[in-house]
Image 1 (cartoon, one colour):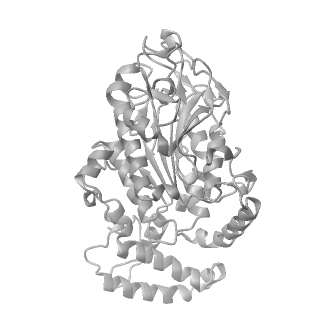
Image 2 (tube, helix red, strand yellow; image 1 turned 180 degrees about the vertical axis):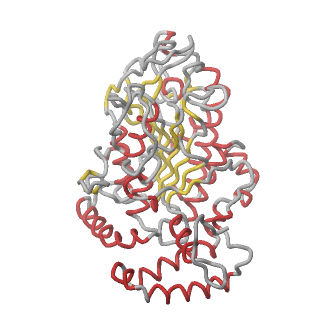
Image 3 (cartoon, helix red, strand yellow; image 1 turned 45 degrees about the vertical axis):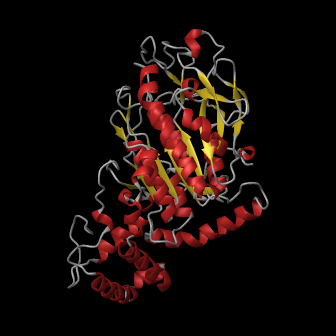
Length: 483
């Protein structure tokens, strides 16, 4: 239902101006967006001139980021080393993939056949500077900036208005919506590490109008989305009448007229109203509209159904969807986390790899068949990899004899769509998967490449909460990823 806490001014039909404002805020259509539209258009024009004719620039209209929280073991999934010593190579055998000469884990058979639609990056790498633990590394991966304050343990303070924005929040602002859908959605819930929830996952100094829409529900179960529905006691015709009245009221408010022209006011309310009446955003979350065979193909678990929901949201017009592996870092590796200090091989074999294998391969195949990969970029990555040597401590954590510790110096990612080369391995690690042998890719470089694919200049200047100039992201475009 459309409601917000606090006192609201209501009209005789029971729909308040603030309720429409609330829906508009979820849509990412707050008043600041309209003030920023001219600047956004100017930035787009400048970027188009700068990268005119450049391969891959502006080919993406949307992004799905699958964030595998906890740090997946690259050496046991994407980058096996069968000739390394036993305390490095681990228990799994390699299998061939559709990328000639490239092998991955035997527990990823579906992805072995789906890699002809993607690029496998084996040279993700950064040297930590207070970024060895999860929260700080996640913040860097999702914002393109290191956090300002990091304790010796790597923990951060809770999210606040001085944080650098998540990439999805920047896209919400820079790419205003033209359809009545949500611009940035995070599924199924925010990332969490210890007691810190959502760090690096919000709009920070851009303001809450650009925060993601967070569902906080398990898509395996029926979804409740009353906040995207009409109140039962407010028929559509009545809401239309109230919309017309509210436009007239707004036109009599001098302070708003100074800030915005009447077109912007009308469009703001029109889109907030459209979001509710059209049902397009609400329907995108409704997995009951999918065939049972499709739901089963993605996997009847939280990650699989979240990934299917991401495809539906992109299909409806959402710009950016972040699907989080549903875990808490340092959680139980047998049930949740990729953070495999206590046990590495059993959880990967029995839980993590089968789920990831099914869901990611289904997404790539499904979107390719629908033609959606042409304009949607897919990124699957964690905040770092795992230590090449088994049972050793590299970050101050204790590890079981078959556990692997944190390892940011070399790890892997899968990227696809929007002009990314198909069936290619990019970069290579050394003989023990300890460091890149060639073509290192910093996580900031990958973010810069995502912005570039969306037609946004990653070098552009933005202003933080103190009105200080900053680069959008401190990274370089990896143009060789594009075919």
